[in-house]
Picture 1 (cartoon, rainbow, N blue to C red):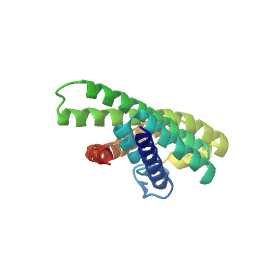
Picture 2 (cartoon, rainbow, N blue to C red):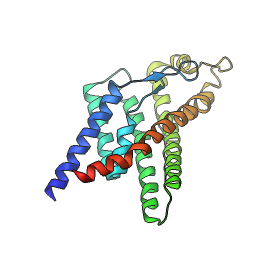
Picture 3 (cartoon, rainbow, N blue to C red):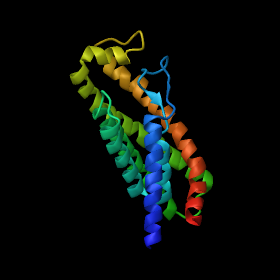
Picture 4 (tube, rainbow, N blue to C red):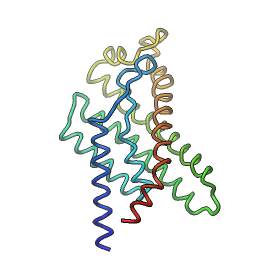
Length: 205
């Protein structure tokens, strides 16, 4: 029993470290001609989803919280702590939703691997988009207060038809939703391709 607890704690620590490294130092790919420049394709949610599928939602939440607190207190930026809180919101939403769907799938008999893959991918993408909308609904008003509405507007207004009266609507519909659809699909597919292999490895050691 003690060995299992220690092994689980070690995996939580390892995946939290990987997620933090990807969050702070990992590869990031902005798509400035499609989305505002501060929306980066990055993969810090990948280890969080993997550990959630491997060990459960508690472990996923532990990794999220470790990443959050270390980032806030050790790697603060001009958006701290609001950017980190925004990431915390959507990360928690994703972990809770996909854990619930995964748990229900495990209770169903004769679920094909294809159906499992598609259902879990839909749950990842759907919860990620909802979480992204919630997190941006939290962060954008705060950034407007801190940096000024004009500054935020200049950051998000990449389309010629966007102006100061409609930028919020277009930011959510043309940036937040499609960006999160794209990012969650990439991370979701990568997660589902490796999670079973890593779970088998975890069970063997």
